[in-house]
Image (cartoon, rainbow over all chains, first blue to last red; front, side, top):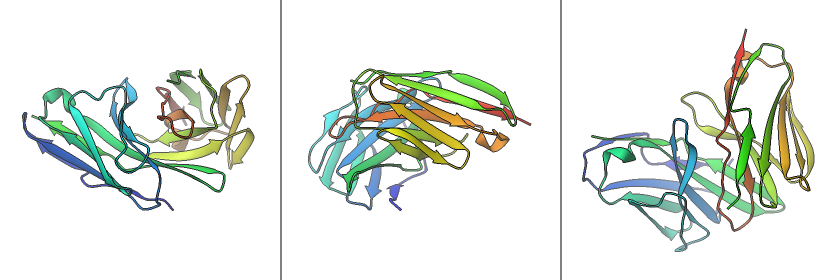
Length: 114
Length: 108
């Protein structure tokens, strides 16, 4: 089974801190995504990456940046955390091959910014 | 961007009822995923469809590519089916957008 691992399940940070959320997948998937999930708003795309060193802004990229130096790892960076970035962050990876379109999510990282 | 509409947003059913959740999208796709998220839980993929119909146990998913529409059916619903169900139309090389989800509560 494809596994997507997010580095931290729960984080508490202070306003202004730099925050790193790491996501690692083990199936050589080309595409990786970062979403945030908030009650009533569903899943909103922050950034996605087609492949190594490729990144595209999603719907809500402000206040975030990403890094994909290796195919298996996609990092989300909050340069200066703010209270409105308190949320559940979900990483997903998607692969294509042999006619299969495989989509897998990590367990999520719940970030609280005080 | 693919605009995704799901209906209904909220659904309460009695145990044993047949349930249908609908998903419409605006841009042609190569595949569509149905996802499930239990309260406080992670997101799991139930189905990936590119045409026709798929069945896993009591769950059935259908897709009409020409009409840009998919449905998820649950037969003989059970309280453990209570979850949020999300559809995600997918195209290779494009961002993955989601419906806002359908929150299902099945009561005993």
